[in-house]
Length: 353
Image 1 (cartoon, one colour):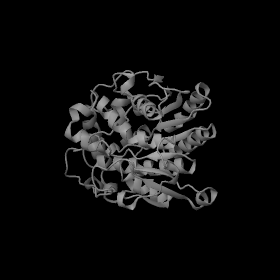
Image 2: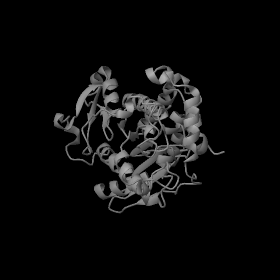
Image 3: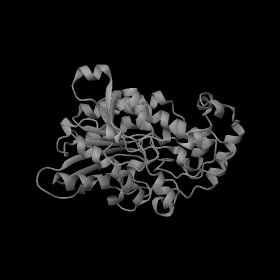
Image 4: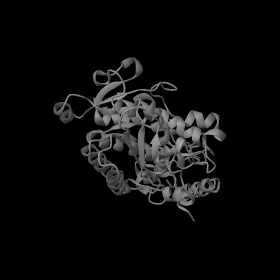
């Protein structure tokens, strides 16, 4: 049986630690969760065998190519896309080239099924291929949640990866763990548990990345409205990974931050928070918690040198117009064991990737 087929069972096995901290959810029996995982697994479509190879040159223009490296799991690898131009990396490379007026050389070392500990090897391979990248994109975390890797372990590996890439001169943008609680086949209470685990990891990832000098973009349930309105267009055939349209939607949230990191936005160095957009400066921990509830939000360290870094200040920015209020109450945050089906859909949730 493939890892894609057993992912929901894996989320339950080893998940007892998560139950203890969820109040009402702690009273839910292991047997109920196991049955729900089995039912959800039956609705999962056939997994893909491979993702398109998107390592290539994109766009055109004068000057040396912008060097973009992509690391992470199936979301970064583009599982579910048909061509290299439809992956997150391919869409980002095309967009950066258009704004920079230069070609973009994309090198993708992401792996389907990757967990955060795999980043050590991916960083090594990326820097062997591109010793001085201009920018690196990382998306990771879905498999850490489904296989219940301790959050501290996941964050530690991600922090080391970002620090190493920064040491090589790269700007680093990390798409944090998507909200696996919006996977369509999940019923309650398993959906609430996975939502909790996903947000916990996304918060820890944000703190680790910002402290290592990178930027994060909250993927959260970013794609949920689109998946709800048109699941036949936004899902690939396995009903877990995005279709080309889903990847384009995710890339649209990441592109502004990638371009800002590369200095392609005029006045970026002087950019401050706009309170009318729900932007703010706060502690890294508080900002990370807010970002986990705010799909599309960017978090980066406050400019100003070592003094601010010691104080642990970070800035939450909203480079894309939110689909709704900046922060809202999510009914899935309250456990409802009477609900039979999950209304949400997967935001590129990584099952075997």
